[in-house]
Length: 172
Image 1 (cartoon, rainbow, N blue to C red):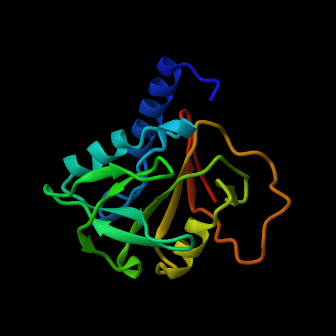
Image 2 (image 1 turned 60 degrees about the horizontal axis):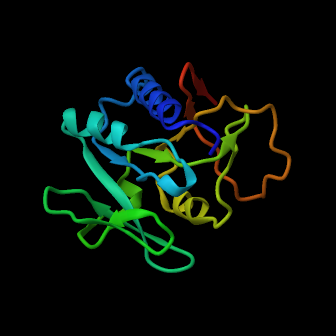
Image 3 (image 1 turned 180 degrees about the vertical axis):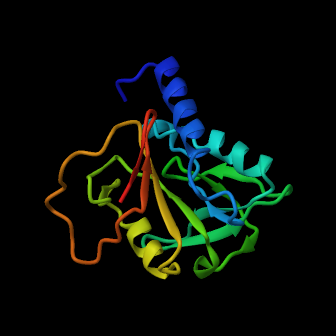
């Protein structure tokens, strides 16, 4: 939240450029979160532009209740609205099975050098990642390099495979 708008945009752009170096571009099905601007999340619309420019299928999350997400295929007719929690999401659309996802971009506040992450504490992505194929690549996007260790990891945590930061990508 302390970043200026210019810093935020520059760092988001650097993260998107760093994504180009990932070994993911032969895959087809990409899950992408849209940023909560009220929480100053990375502007993932830049990653969306990269995916669409390479003709990838993009799947967006939609909050359906206090515990679960639905996953919607992004099409030209998909309408995006901001929900009550200020999260942009599709109103409706074609549901997509999480087991078919190749790559999942994961929102986070910070991660550690083992790939464990801290999010906003609601557990939506923890529950979602358990429904995905174990070989789906999980990629965090972060303004900040990983910290050495997050100590209070719960038993069911699913670590990231990569974390993309403005100047470096970490592989776990």
